[in-house]
Image (cartoon, rainbow, N blue to C red; front, side, top):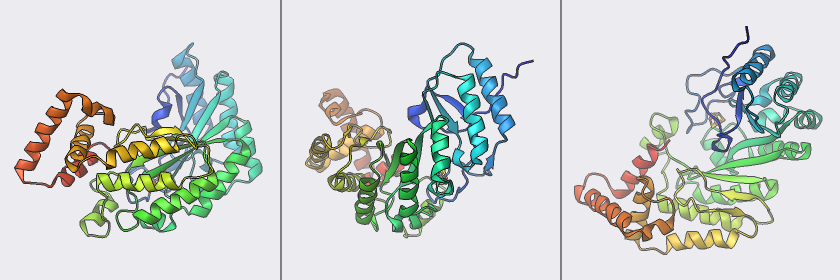
Length: 342
Ligand code: SF4
């Protein structure tokens, strides 16, 4: 009898919402970043080729006539698979779902740089043509402080391998990851590395310190000072100002970001991205607070939503209540609201 069950991992990038999900690995081969709890308590393992192939055919039977053009390989790092095994999986995927145009995966720089350029090319030719790279920062100091286990050099090398092989590349950056202590170097070095890589897409995320993480402990011990919402916008302004010579698509699509309208293709979009940031930064403190609270309690999605008087007044009432309660500062409230979003 045809097996109809197949494994699904806990995460996928938001842009893969309509993709076929096939699990090649379980967990993250590193699992030590101080800010991350994605795979907490899960030991990393590479699934057997036979099990993955069974899942592919089970997915085929389950989805019947549904045609997928994109597929995401879960969980943390398909490149950890021996190349021959990964190629076999990709070939099976193409047999079962011949309409697939894009197959993507997360890939850790340290793992990919263990492959040869020829292996990377073979992997891309077999269909894995899109890479999600969680570089988070281009600063060695920030990467070390966060125990990322990768270096700017390894990120650059893996990006070169991926691009030479013909893969598209989406790179994630986390604003605020250096805290106040390393904010400047985080922006400068991240821009420098992005300028060297010129990824197809740059996706911005905003740091929210999850309770119970090592980073949370560092905050309690005074070893990491989180940026305020406004400081994170300042940091992003510095990053954008320094991006140069690239033609990447730039986006703040995740709702954890404050200014979700910051999206566009470089170099054309650079001036309008900076103008939007300045629009926020030149608002009065009280208007900024209104906007931040309105974003965090889901009244606004963009700056222009503040012109809805009903929304504005409702948010202002909440803001006044918080100010009158005298318990936490407004920044503490923003910090905790952001924490609840992850
Ligand atoms: S490499 Fe990614 S998934 Fe693994 S611990 Fe770090 S942030 Fe989390």
